Length: 563
Image (cartoon, rainbow, N blue to C red):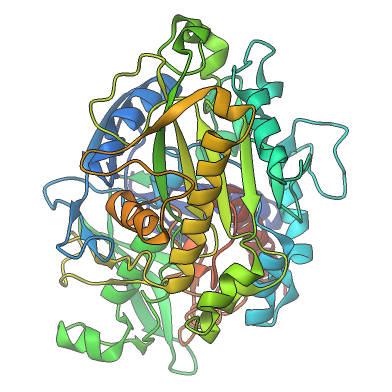
């Protein structure tokens, strides 16, 4: 295509980029401005072959099998190359095309889980930036706007029923989707004191049915759910950098973008970055917005000194455990002939999600080592751990998918560890360096140990689950864990097999790099709309939050355009 100008240039064709582009097109049509008003720059064309970069090696077989069935495409799973300080930094093989676990991994290649965080998580966000639009009450209209909730009897004050994203529970998706461990697991969790939570919005604590954004057995990527008809889309072109001019006050103002083929595309109104947690800070730094000293050291002309660009990286760190079932002939796990039912593949093979707070007396042991910036972990109302059981093996290479093994995930919801994204070089084609710094605080260690011990208690000591589970299957070179294992033994296991759940955020934090209107501080004509703007972790899977973020961003931009 030959577009050379647009009112709004959106860089990134992922969840927030497609949502914002569609909303902006509708809004601009209402305002009767030029027809080619929205230009969406999508770095990758979504075709039938997806490359996914995951860590560690153990999970690749499971992901390949599941994605092949769920997406109906051939899937190549390629591993990240770990830096020597495992759990601290990883980079990608530069010969491969890295999606950087942001745009496409969150959009397409995840477990389709749909959840909001606790109201307290969003209220902390709103308080940090002193703007109630980002509190739970402020975001609620946009949560509702994006979703088409399956249960028409659900609370209309909390749910939307006319949005583009279809949300459904495991049991409601198909009457034949009846997994054998559904009731035993529910009873086991309630037997150790976890309360059933029928509608985990506002307060997520308890055991709730797994919710997914599936429709008729298929995933709903944003470009399909929202549609991008009428939007000019350029694919397979990287944005090398943002081009700046001067406004009336001699302040830098984004005037367009330079593409990897050398073309310049002019923005009449704004450039909007939706390139993801890793891509957005890279584009900013390559464009001269970042730490002045770091940019100068690379020979990049400084447009605006913003040392927080690329900092504050956080992610939902997690680990899997493997379990052998006692009666595989009963069809409890993937691989049994019972699983030939099409209904079993209408979503993730999972029934329940458990969200728990770590007891305050447990956290008191680490509170003195928790910095002020980490206080979100200790606030009332938030949940610290998400636990789930998947009826398929994940975590150990070479394990046969023969109906004998299931897995569990323990995910840290409110991590206090922080990492960073920095430039590897001045070349836009060189991937940024990602210092993840996972699992680096005592609070994070304590929470994951607690969650792991709870799962061990449920699976090995609590009826009726224990009647179905023969025991844990330890990874190679590791000892089996039990509810009586020492904290140090559990910690060592997590360090050996822990991994990201691909929910990275925070690297262009609101209040530090962008204002509460999503505009980049210190320059004009530039906004960021993606997960990089989250100032603190949200205790839930990111999709619902990011759709609400994009919907609210569209309203903010429209309100400003009407003035």
